[in-house]
Length: 90
Image 1 (tube, one colour):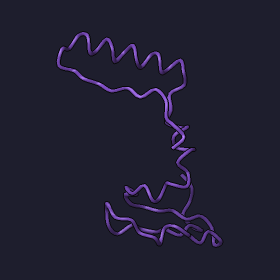
Image 2 (cartoon, rainbow, N blue to C red; image 1 turned 180 degrees about the vertical axis):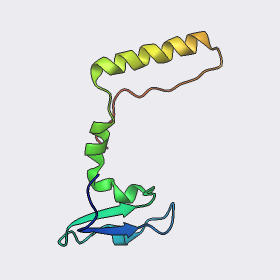
Image 3 (cartoon, one colour; image 1 turned 45 degrees about the vertical axis):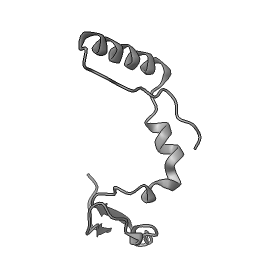
Image 4 (tube, one colour; image 1 turned 90 degrees about the vertical axis):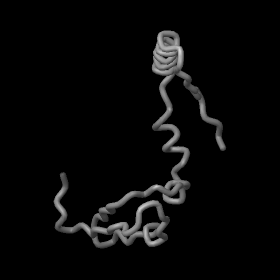
């Protein structure tokens, strides 16, 4: 874990609320460490494509996941699942 000697720590005061102070953090004095629950899409809309790419299964894992979910659904009659294999560019 990096040392905090040159790190500015910013604490989010409210959960489930967007705080615009986190939009433009001054990083000129060193690293900035933010602590809190960033539960608004507004914090991440500018990196949406990157996040979607990181959380998309590679093709070989898509097949594995589909097979696993199908097996579970066949063994347990009350299981319902929804599997979304690809994400549109929206």
